[in-house]
Image 1 (cartoon, rainbow over the protein chains, first blue to last red):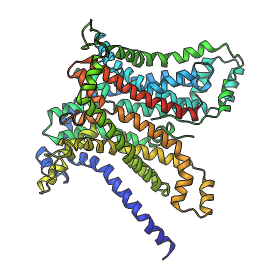
Image 2: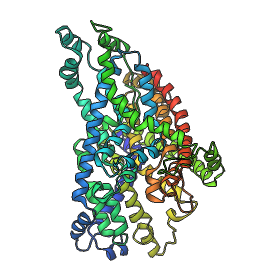
Image 3: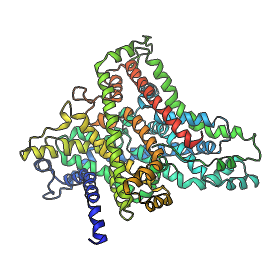
Image 4: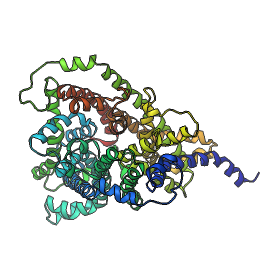
Length: 278
Length: 308
């Protein structure tokens, strides 16, 4: 047996496993796309069949009943609030913790690591009561700040490693030239870590965009619904029309998928940078 | 989701070398303040209030909750739902410590030998991970598990007599776990693959020169190299298995008949369905203690590589 065919033979079981897993990963997504173009009876008849005649009206109907115009605006507002708050608070903290100029750095890091892993239920109930008292329920920006506080510790830890990679000559040279700490941060360090800021922004942005627990608890009036909550409201109204429901799902899934494909390297970097030594 | 990064102490101290050491400290505390204040306002202070609330009969609204001592803790410990929840959290932890870990590591090893196609595979396997829990849960519920519109319903119509696992008392937790694992395992794959790829090539070549087979290369070269990542993922999976909420709450809300209740959904329902904030707070504190124990392990492990 030739060497190459031997290798092909050995690779086959692995290949079959990979193909099966690709099928498993994509199957539910394919179901969404197929059924988003069918009317209700057609879905019930056979969810696996191709649409007989593509019915694009499901998308218009889903868009309208899920309130996606407002929903996407709210999702953008929530995500922007979260990402901006996280980066503005985490970046300076990460710098200080990377430079370790103060004694409190160690305890602060330990605090952040604990904060990263506490259950949301540990602080949710009093927070809810306070927000209700202050009239901040259904306030998208306020909810964005909560989501930011939850994501901030991870962002600090990730950004800290980006600050550590900056060669120390850079800030030193600027200091020699008479720049103060803020100037060094603004003109030397921030540009140097901006790739890290983008990575962290993507990861935190994805978390905020997909967020469920905090949104569903705090955003109660329909005007404040994010796209995900709007989609969930479809499941009440269109429990029987799966076609519309799947069109609603497709509208939510497609932008994320395209963004992910466009920025996959950054996504993967962000996911990995926190978890792998080195 | 986790943090463990090697730190070069020399780079650390070099950055520190500030000609005006001792003078800029105020500025540094100022730079730290926004992050600390944010976390204190949203997490720490309400967390302390939760602890206080857990000793009262607060309903979430009343201005004068009564102090009831450890009554809430006694009540939840005696509640069979609490025991079900702890049991389910343990089942969940065991499922997640095995299935996605084996899948992720196994596929990472397969992709290690496929340098040309692995990028494509990684992207495909990560797709479910980047999609929202809300859509994932609803798609599986309606298109796969539903006895009317789902694949299960379709199979029933073809004469296959399969019950939908999501509505069975014994099967529901596995039906939900399947969806969460489908969503999650790609993340572990990417992490493990990145860790495997950092194994020094010389070590692998040396082992192969000495006649090691692929299992021996994995066992004696790759495994020791990825051990820190494996351990860290182990702890993170444990922590997040005890906090799991989204998929359960979206797909079963703890039902049928509390058979999929987790500590997180139990606490949530106590607070927002029956307005027993005191009891909900007690469950939250119990979860916090579990989390803290895991956190301490986690911090200790990280510190080895992170010189806090």
